[in-house]
Length: 193
Image (cartoon, rainbow, N blue to C red):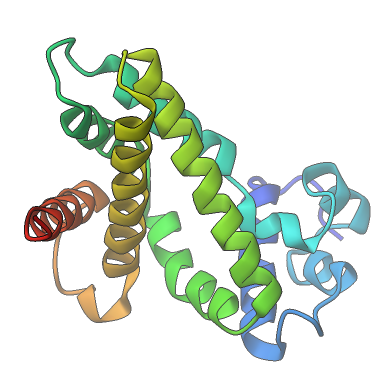
């Protein structure tokens, strides 16, 4: 079994999503994931503690990118402008690899209650990172939380649209999709008055 192929972590994520789609999350074992990725079980466990952790891979990095963008926004930026800067920073780091994972990721999550709950926890973590960054800019707790929640919704909506295979003929980076989703959500919020 080859041990030195690059991108072991990415290969494990891809293998897991393929297997989750083919046979279901509950029926997929760590051994099957490692075998599909042409890696050993011990390599799997060097990267992930269990198969559930596969679906939150990259959450820390994504949280960090969102917070970095918010903190780097101009001092005069409003909370929503700072969130837009965070979305731009995080979205700009996503690659075609991330786009290709989208449909399989969404299918796996939609088909399993445990994964839906885990995904909801991931969203809570992203919102917390964004809200903390906003509070560090002096934004009040309530405004920081509302702006962060809008940001999480925009990122999720933008990512889902960007990774939708029916949009393959629609050019654009994830930044275009998250910016459009954020503008759409801001307009919808304005209608609530």
